[in-house]
Length: 257
Image (cartoon, rainbow, N blue to C red; front, side):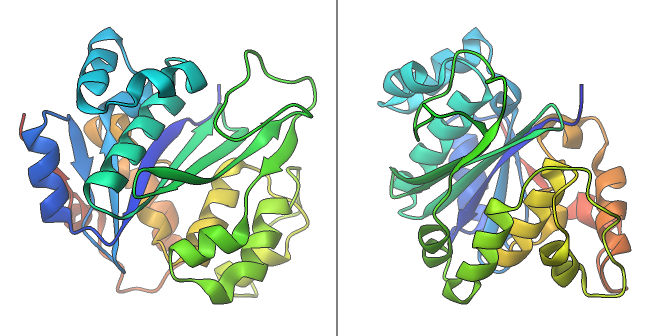
């Protein structure tokens, strides 16, 4: 099984507000520092909620039972439930992202508690936003994704064309990503994306989200010390003034429950 992770990016909410609120309502989570107005939440339930997690989410969010009917009980349910709840609580935008089995990239965009957009690299002819399928299709198709909504929501209207390229680029065993261009230019140039993590990186860069804080990271990765591996991969492509792993670990905050 390939890499799996899920996290939620909030726009316009400060880390201290999130830490205080998530601690108050008993969420077991890590929170990133606020950078470029983006703050990342890594909630434990996003890895796949157990019965206790489901009960807590139902108690926290009045629409949780409806969301269960749409997404079942897996990671998508927890991510959507928390994204909807937090975006309404803080009157902000939220982007929930999930990478599954190293092959599927999915996101759910909401604002003020309402879904604006959804996207998957593993849909079929019957796929529709707000609903998961009972089993994986025999042939995955890229479905959903509205670049204008995504970019407008995060104040990145100049990136609409680039986001369209990123969302529509096929999966595949692409040639090595060229290193004679800037990392972002190289990600736009390749013919296909060899993994959903690469697609996620390209999208994060297009939206102004620091990739190092979202790629490959979830609660379990942070709780078991896997941050270093992912952060060093990110640092490889950036300039020398990027924080070290040790500095980043100090910048991350865990809720008090």
